[in-house]
Length: 257
Length: 261
Image (cartoon, rainbow over all chains, first blue to last red; front, side, top):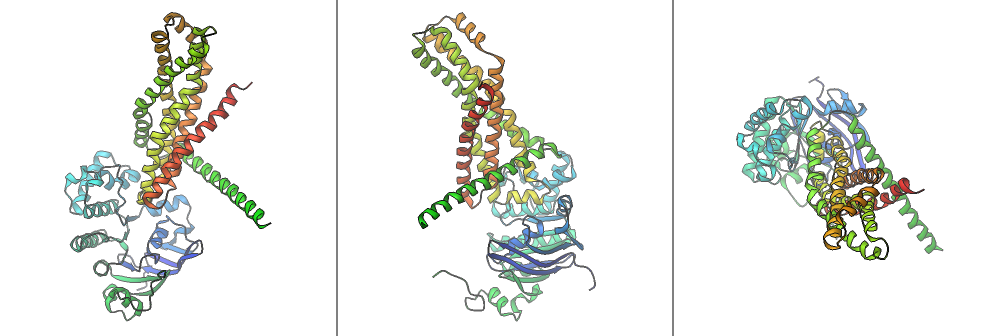
């Protein structure tokens, strides 16, 4: 295992005011594998993804993709790097002023300058990959159910065939069956594209289905890393408490009295 | 002593806050404008904004203009009855409408109609991560969302005001001739004789400025909104209030520039 990791984070730190959200994150994700990051609400999971995407500027540390530190790149370099990353947002974040097919083909229309007519056909193909009929392409995002919105969001993320895929709580707000369906689609897409994936979630069933490896984030630090299959019996007291949903344990919820 | 210091501190904080906000806004405006000169350009987004700001505002601007012209004729004829009323009314209507009321009324109506909608749309996109999603899809949100709207505001409002000018003068003409019984030919003659190019042009320049301000306020407040539905609501209110106040303030400044001798 001397291969260089696809994504390598070192000492990533971010604070908002005096609230430290990321406190020196070190994380490696090997090419073609899926990393699941678990952690409670407010543990900094979303901020971690937004830092890698360049939506939030970290205070310190490095983010290397294919060995290149993207924080050291200029604006054009970052935009170039971002073209190879697809992201599925927590609530889909579909553009509600555009029909579904244009949502799916948005990245293609924006960067590769395909003709609109060709884009329509490509969108139909991508929609089929996530199990949606061609006719869905003419609907508006607000006309779709939550599960369908997630599928369209997934289709939009994979349309430009990115090397790296991010999933922000892909199953939150879905029923368990739809959650399993989305997980299945995610695994299929990642395998088919050969992409490297990072998913953040607090749904254990989903974490085991999507991930090859897993890491737990607590108070801005990685407190455990291991194979995703070991999540339920990791031997780490914090992970055990989290995955089994126990109230008592090393993690104390800070509630106001 | 402490009370005095507290007071000074409060004033100081407010002043600093205002400076910071002005700086943010200026940078935002400059960045938005700079995207108008750097490709790629989003023609569809621009045309959509033109439709929204210009064409769909036509009915409300037209109605406002007609009634404003009618009221002007009615009010001024009572006041000017003692003097040479006929030429006075025509003069007052045509100058007020082209220089002042056309641009200001159209600006305020568009601020209410379009500024609010813009802030709400962009604000919702912000709080539902759609703006972040644009970035992840290799699209600069300032270029895609803000620049086309700024340009559309700049172009659409002068066109609207041209329509408003014509309808405002028409409103005054209808009341003067049908209700007040002035002679049609003399009234028209007076209108045309008094009207000069600079009256109309200064009004159109004002309109371009007001249109830009409305778009800028809608985009700026929407873009920087946070905190869900309440945040979007607050952004919408701020956009309309700020645009309206700025329109009146800049109206004064521009009038000073054009007409003060």
